[in-house]
Structure formats: structure tokens, C-alpha cells
Length: 415
Image 1 (cartoon, rainbow, N blue to C red):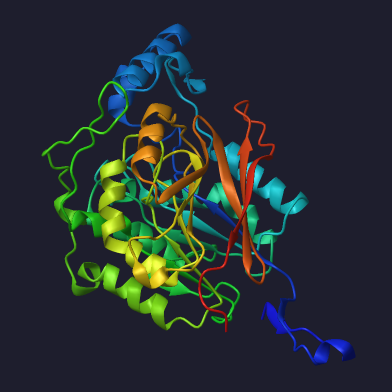
Image 2: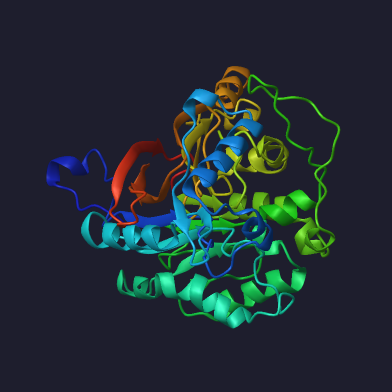
């Protein structure tokens, strides 16, 4: 158990003893790592240019199409295939190396949480693409992290699924779940589960939800931006895949399960992980975020300490003051960390981000960085969580570099 009643000096006995940590709980949080050169999108390959200059111009065209400020353009790092084609470089290996180096030099890592989009671009396919999922799992889920087992006794990666993990079929998504249920490196008890990583649920509980299935069960509008980066209203619906729509009572009741599970948890720290963020700054997923806030923000504000997500290939930290949930009045703001930069980079849209902050005073952006590879490291002390966002250079060296550090106060009630 990571928490104990401190021994009191005689003079301190009159004042009582406070709960103090034997040692902090420390863990990694990373998402969107599954971009591997052996499993590229055929459509992307068809359009891949054969010169660096062509790659840069393709990047510029996408930048402008997404309404990003033209003066801020820079391309993401590129990778030249044996065919001579240029594609976006993958940070899968560099980020995995940076996490391992960080955990063995600068910080302890007792476990990790993996925030979805674990396999790009189509998840496991259950043979639909004529390729063996077992080989895909070995290359993308096992090899990059095989030596993480040495980081601590019983090291586990607690995984969530993302939208790309559902891309091909329900059979493919469930094949990935089964792999991680059986792997000694991973823990995944279905598409939603709760787990006590320290072995004592009074220390910490992590609550894992499949936000893609959750969002597939509600109406989500398409995103659209005006030339100045502000939101445009549209009545167009972003249609879900039929196989990702909730099909069982368990899948239909994900939000109520989360509320009940958080409410009855005895944990000092209650952390929720899912793939989709509540807020993000890239300007391409804000309707999904809006729909997700309607579904889970009340439960998070009432009961949770932190929400960790991926989906945007960025590193970000925000707070929501939970003003829409009266029961949370007087508590510290809810912290959110977006750690989706473990393989494929995405730029911010700073124009969109400015409009988002101006129009949503309940949200405060603490840090946002796009066109970056990296991960998050979380340290839980008695009453505060220190979040460190760690980047690694585009040269692929795998060196960890501290990009941002912030302390969030614990929100849930003490034991």
C-alpha cells in the first residue's frame, strides 16, 4: 500500500497525524502510438510524393485546408520509403525509447496507461486485409515495449481502444481486446473496466472507458471552421460505423457505469482514461469533444481527479472549472491531459484555440504543443498530481526532453 499514517513526534501527536505517502505513485500515459511503416494506409501511399519538396507542398496544402494560420506552417518530419516515396515519419520507436530512458534515469514508472489508437490505420483486421493479426500485434504492441517489464515488478500497460482500433470491424476490435487480455504485458478487461494498479483500491483506481463506442451511440456533428479559425455550425452528421455502435446493455450504459463506479470507489485518487479528449486545440475534433462532455463531464466533475486522453496527436493540458455541475462547487478544477503524440504528429490550430478559449471561459489551456512526439508522466503524491509532458526530438534519437510541468490538486474526497 502506498499510503500510511506517518509516525508522529510527541509534540505532533496533539495535532494528530496526517496521511503521508511511503512513496509517490508514478506512471506513464501515452496514446496513438500504433503508426508503423509496415502497416500504412494504401490511399496514403497512392498519394505519397516522390520528392521532399513534394512532401512539403502536400503538407502545406493540408495545413491551409484545415484553416491553420499560413504564417505558422512547418511540415512534420518525413520518412523516405525504399520506393522513394515520402510519408510522415513515425515516432513509435523514438517515443518508446524516450519513455524507457526517462523511467530508468529521471523518474520511476510503476505502470502505464495506453490511450487508444493502438494500431494504425485500421486496427486489427481479423484477416480482412489478408495479413496476420498475430504478426501485427507482435510488431506494434509487443516489440516496442517488451523491455518495459524491467521498469518495475509486475509492470503493466492498462489499455483503452480508440477509433482506429475499431476501423475495420467489431471482430478486429475484439481480437485486439483478446490479445491484451491474454498478454502478460497488458491488462484489458473488456472495453470498460476499473483497476487498482498498486493492488490496493484505496490508493488509486483507474477507470477505462471506450469513448468511441460511447460516441457511436449519440449524434455527433461534422467539424467545420471559418477562414478565421472559428467554429461554423453545420447540420451534417459524422456517421459512426455500424459495428462500433453500442450493441449490448453494457455498451449502452458506459456513462452510467462510469458514474456509479466513480461514486462507489474507495480510492484516494480516481483517474479516468479514454481515447477522445474533452478539449483540444487542433481544431478538427471539437464536435466529438462537445458530445463527450455532455456524456461524461458531470460524472468527472462530481467524482474524478484527472481525465487522460489521446486522439489529437498533440501534448496538451487543460482545466475545466466544472461550473456546469453545481455539486462540484468549491473543488479544484478538473484537470485533463492529452497525450496522443506517441507516433504521428499533428499541428495545432492556434486560431481555433484562441476562439475556443474566448468562447468557453470554463476551460483554461495550460499547455498545448503540436508537431511533436512525446508522452506524459504522472506522479501522485498525497494531495497533488504532478504532470510532466515529455517530448523527444524529430531526429529520432529517443532522448526525453521536459516540455511542461504542472501540479493539479486532488479533487475527490480523502479516506
